[in-house]
Length: 302
Image (tube, rainbow, N blue to C red):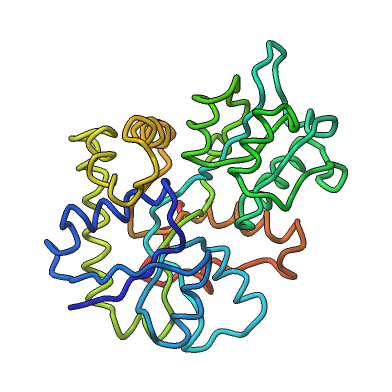
């Protein structure tokens, strides 16, 4: 069985996908993976539609957004096999003695992530949860995370929203501190495999093998640790030093970011869908059963 798998974009929190591939855990389950680059975040969706790939990984946000716009057909997207079950983003500020709360963003110079939509959508819901209207926050929204790290170092910004390796780089290069970890809100459906309804049926056996491979990652990580994970995936991050990469992966492992399991969390899906709906990104509440492959449904409790 050979599967064409496209990455979403190159991110440190996607390390389980790269490690599973590099360690041969997919191959052990009898599936050969052709790992393909993606031109930009979400570009794999078009490749799926054109039949150029069999599956990609990325945010269930893209499945929810598509279902909000179009009725389900054989070409519609489906999510299965949850890997990143929590939000990998952090808020960083220049070091201060005063404690930080989210309401402080109303009075600070703040930059949100511009590269992808999910982090700001989820942070908006965090703000609403503490009584803050996100529309009242003045924010920089059109610069890259690298540019925002540099602006923080210059003192041009007070708080920035970033993921790894920018967290560890900012802490190493500037007088900075982590003031908010989005993973602490709990489950938020962040990264799964994504295919089409027809593709799910056509590649059922190969996808089952891929799931079994992914399920071997956490036992391997428990036995080997973040430093060994950094060594295994270093070729995928040539511009990140081994020391920084190890720090990044240790931070994510300690946050229990990854679940690497067949089922997609109902709680995590609901949180993501709520963030999208209340931000106006979708026009109607999303259905878990309509967006998640039946084989990946989490059993209801009670």
